[in-house]
Image (cartoon, rainbow, N blue to C red; front, side, top):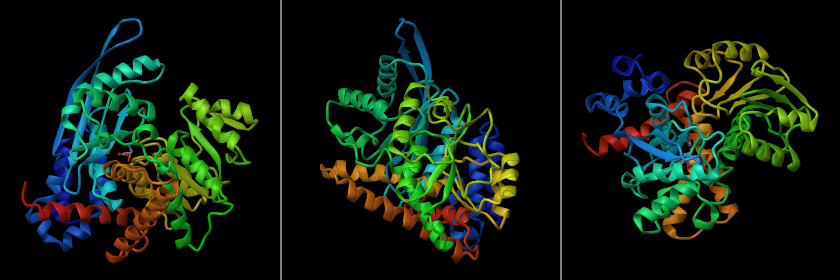
Length: 450
Ligand code: GLU
């Protein structure tokens, strides 16, 4: 490995030892860019890598709210404005009890390269709170969001930092957050948030964009292998917004999701989760209880395996981890390697531990695609939402979908090309990291030392 890259990884491992997820993602991205740094000594001269692993600004804030019984609760909010070299900071907010600085920084670092891959002018950022939305009433969610935005509104804006949703933050939360921003600022600056409702500047296709984009990307991988999506069976972990978009688009293109997994176990639906009735039921099930997918198996009379993950099953063609970080560990990766399944398409942010990812990438019979490329269609359509807001008009469904499709084809092609250029063959993981990195590094170099 290039000595400068190794030294930066070593620095980060020591300095950020209490931020394991962040260290993990830095190692993953930077281990791919070693040949690029060999070729470009100017990066070391300008200390680009140490600058890249240091967020431009990170802050935490107090979020106090009152529950329906009148009890006062205090949470911690976060926003990490990681890298603004190619555009305003852009990235979601995650509300989950396990949120901490390490998770926000890992997501912000990933986001920087993902956003660069979209080809659109968006920098990288991420935020959230250690707030647990489970079991909260609508009024409690609203009060939490209002308090959260009261602390954040001074530091964001359509040309500064544009938050969106992530786990625990969907259309409802974005609505309350935007309402409070508008109330405090006294203006209508709807480009400050994306993932908005259609009535106040949201974009068509945004809710489905991440899942649709993942299938468009998968389609390019299959084409590269002279294979076709028609008739393919897919195992998806997760059944949230992103997994739902995957199910829907896969069905539209003639494939089917036959496995889905939740925190309580997994469902096997051999017929495929393809009908409108099934897709609608998932939405309803999730609204009532986001922790259990067993009711689906009960309703449609299919197999449910409690407390297990499905990694290792042989009766699918494609695995798509779309739940959360580190869902696939080394033991799961061994099972995947033995299953004979050819495609491993990451969807959630960092769903694979580094050890597991190395093992899968070493298997020449499996094609691995990285989440920062596969799931980039979500934030990509967020950037299209920003464009629509600044133009003060809305694009049609067809226009947004066409742009999303084009974006995913470009991301796949740019990743394949970057890997090829560095003599790495069809390595989509390295290629995605290299392509994402190059644009950010170039912008930083051209903007001078700071
Ligand atoms: N949280 C999503 C992501 O991981 C979406 C971010 C956005 O739309 O800004 O990319």
